[in-house]
Image (cartoon, rainbow, N blue to C red; front, side, top):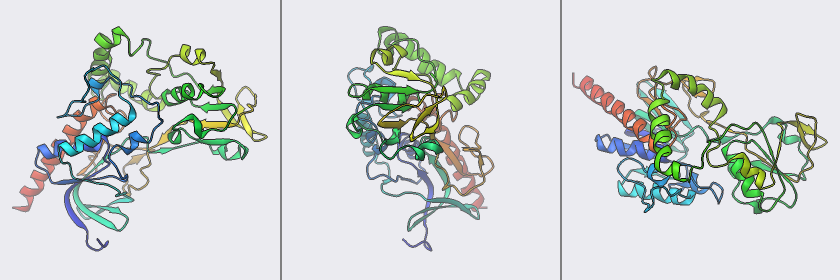
Length: 369
């Protein structure tokens, strides 16, 4: 399709992960014509591309999307990343969601009252656009990473899959949040490991233990994260910037786990000296590998609309009020602490689908006057 002949679609959903598929399910139930665009060649790719030993932090009973529970005999089983990818693929097939794979959106703009969605040589014109993507789109590393010796193997944690990617010798994992801590444990089975960074705190119980299985999962996940920590409660509004800025506490990993594995905790990395990582206590670490678990940026540079305060778009629970027809789903703490999780994204998707349906009714009524 040439750029001069846009394909007209009522609603374009950008992103075919759990957020986009959930939006698609709810749009289908409301009879709204739509298409889901995803840059990858297979549904569930974002999950399958993560490290081999990854298991999700929520039990299977909380991993299902609206309309299709996660298929597990044990609701307290913690699925692997490939099992999650397979579930998402099955979900899209079950509801016959119109997902177009291999379509990478490179520009979102406005033309009159319509949105223009450009993806290579394809162009879509829409009344509504739902950006259904998480905030972890593009891994970031410190600017001084390029000063490390060329003999050191280094990469961002988003590219880590297994210890065989590393060369022999010591490994420095920079960033001690959930991904960094779990990757450090994975690597420690075959390499000496240092773990750098502030301890973000941790869940003070075993998430796979008896109490978590029968009580705390409901209280913490469905209670605290889903109903209490929201933008509509004072405690939620107070907690939101802290969770966005510092991330979640360690869920599965405990300090005793890293200590038992022989992982040495070290202070923050502040630079490079003689080609080696420099700590804030002025120590230099002689390592052969560095894994940067140093966070992400949303990767929304392709959105050519004035809606951003820093990296975060201005929105009210996913609705961009200053640009009617533009919505977000899947962002961390979009509406609640559960917004980025399987058990929370459905509520957000349903609310956005309602907003799209209301707008379509309004546009239809205006056109007949």
